[in-house]
Amino acid sequence: MSVHVLLTGASGYIGGTLLKHLLASSFATGLKVYALVRSEAQGEEVRKLGGATPVHGDLSNGDALRAIVVDNKITVVIETADAMSFAPAQAFIEGLATVGAATGAKTHFFHTSGAKLFSSHTGLDGTVALSDSDRDAVYNVQKGQHSPFPPMNAVVPVNNQILDCAAANGVAGYIVVPPMVYGPGEGFGNKTSIQIVGLFKIIRATGKVFQIDETDSSWVLCHILDLTSLYLTILSAIISPTPPPAGFYFAENGRFKWTDLSRGIAEKLGVDTTVVPATPSDIEAIGNAIGCPAPFVPVQVAGSCYLRGDNARLLGWKPLFGADHLLSERGVGDDTLLMLRELEGKSAL
Image (cartoon, rainbow, N blue to C red; front, side, top):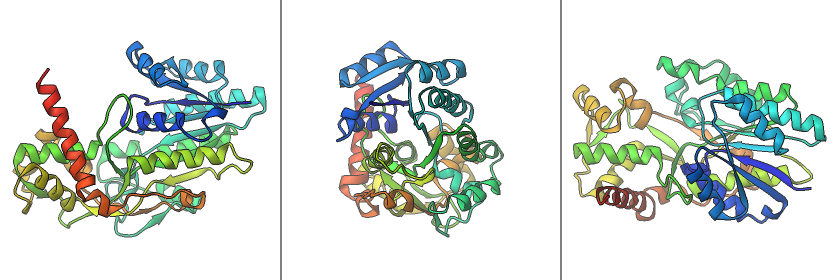
């Protein structure tokens, strides 16, 4: 019997790349893949890939999400479209529980979170490594966090809420935590990383490389293809005789400094790579460049985060691209050129 998989975010950077590689995976023949779409145009793009069936739905409609899961006998949901909300996850999990009860199949839910929820932005010491190997320890860390940015306090509990909901409904829950993801997307929609785009816009608008934090802070990284292979590693284990443990899966393969990444982009753009401390007026200009209020600029393009992704490695995950690649011509150089080409394409329309 084939495993029925539902993927959300198929037009996005992560979801689109994952869909392409999922359909090309060595175990794809044992899957029936569905992709949640919002429009007929997206549905047509999914059909063009071959091997996936588009289903129309909206993450804000919980009843529809439950029905999609139940009607299509979905046993695995991979959610890549909404890192911030509990409600869609709850609807998917309840649908999976219904399928499990009706068929006796084991069901699984992937939630795509984000490293900001395990960083200085949510009260953690970003200079001390946090491993995902002890699920209860990470759960308790999340439970005790308090963000200096009040709006983030509503998001911090979401990961634990999802794990609790999944466990209560007999569904295996996996919290995948991408950090700063880079590399060209390979899906039919968004091709670029949010953080790389933000730094690109700042440097292009101001002509400067800024140090936004008081100290030269570091963050964890993962190439989009390594992140994709992490999902596939977990999924492969799910359909094996020995399913993986539920819990947290940090997608990381090293750390980088924000100023080093900014300097790499600046060099490619022909901008002075001298790093200057950001003044309050600079922060205002940066916020205007990336379209966010000045107080939230550090949340977008600064801060400290130090995670260790041990769980996926125990399953056999072998990431290929580290900090040296990120800061090389094939890393930040290629991403910068991609963004320049996209700007040129838009200006030509």
